[in-house]
Image (cartoon, rainbow, N blue to C red):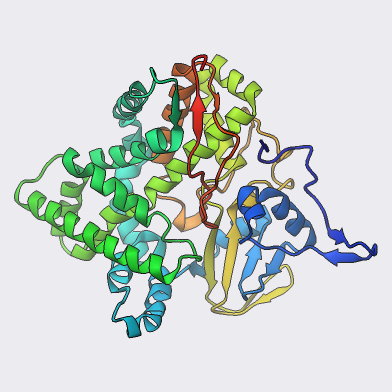
Length: 428
């Protein structure tokens, strides 16, 4: 079983050599199976060979930490316009009498699609619910949920960390925050899972049409919940957002609805991959896992290293708003620049021993949650969920080890996560 980022693996290779002995430039292909299984050797080679790289489909790709951090903070770039990309695909569905209008409408007020001043206004309103102080108060509830999920499998001696812990945890936590009734949380979980891949550029038209149906159901369900809270407010986030809307023009009806959907559709996947990728890294590095067992109070620092080491979000995109240059390469207004966050977090210029998992690593300014105005809204919540889940797993499940020789990664180039992570424990 291959360990991700094996330090003995060759990671820097400016050129490949063919059978005749002549040099050939390294070809970067983020779509092949080898890359999906372990992207880090390819990142290293691309960073050494051509750190500002033009893909064969026209967009630009960045792999250096300094370049990526600079773009994330540069007002000459805007976030990738997901609603516009979805709207443009309608032309291919006209002959089928189908469209993606619900998907366009549902994503048009997502924070990741907005720019100032709307982004500033909406983030200020919603951000209060996800501040570190508010999230810290969720620790007891989060611990109860994790303990309940582990209680269900502890006597069995085996579990799938993804389906039995990592996926249900964020849905139950966000459901608690929003005030989602327990009887529909299972359905919301399925919808969130269906929509979690919305940012992947490889989605087929068939997949997008299905997502369009899902987001319409999501919208109808939350519309009913909002109507109920309007009549009978509760001490939950939906009621708080309604109150903000009713103060004036701070929050529109569409924004209120799409904020609720955004929290599930994008917040879930980051936490799932943090827990799954993080546990796999620890299982492949037993000495680091033992260190964490002995010193559980280092979990906050450990989670930062796990986020850096195998980042849940591997790539995001930005659009240039004007002509500019990056390291001598001319980027034209309107061109897409792909930021490989996973590559930035393994850049040896920023992180010494970048391919080693070092739980007590200091000065770990990773970009797993991006940076700038679009820094992940739910970062504090994902951190708390990851800290509690990982510490509880290694504390409560003795002799924890991978239970399969085959690991399958999800077919998603924007997000990095396992389909399943089967483990055994307790002498089985």
